[in-house]
Length: 207
Image (cartoon, rainbow, N blue to C red; front, side):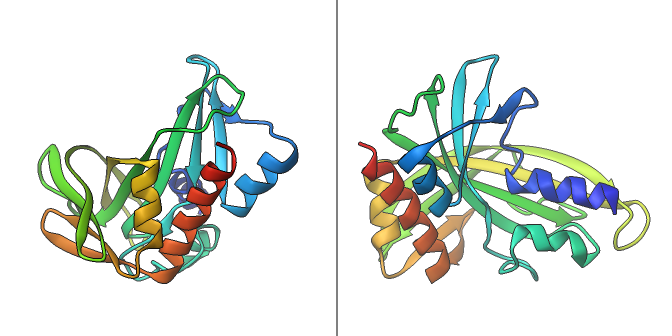
């Protein structure tokens, strides 16, 4: 269970934060806007850069609609594809970004969930129109868990696709949105679009 809790907490940031990162202290209206948008700022002292991450949300898998902190009680690592968005700025003082990254993270038993290669084609569509597309590098690593049985092998993969702030807004405001990964279409549901809209609103409010 200890290993599972650790993996779950790591999953909250989708392997997002470097070991040297620490929570960014914020006060006042900005802190409240970030909290409402479920945004977590992390400052890396080594590079003096702050990265701001949205809490991940599930897209596929049995537990895709389960809040991340509850998945530790489910008995095994959470399989499926999740996503988050994040952006960075120099130093600790907030600076509105021009670009955000849409991150996909997959955890799969016995093999890769995104691609068997080192790159994958990813496209984001809003109402049938491609908002952004890219051939994205894929980071892959494996780990073992004692769930559901001893020495179960899992493969975790991570891939990023860039979006301008305007493209993020278009995606969030769409009636029908989807992520296309290696030709596979995965719909973004209403709760996903609402979460993206809160992020877009938080960024826009501070410009």
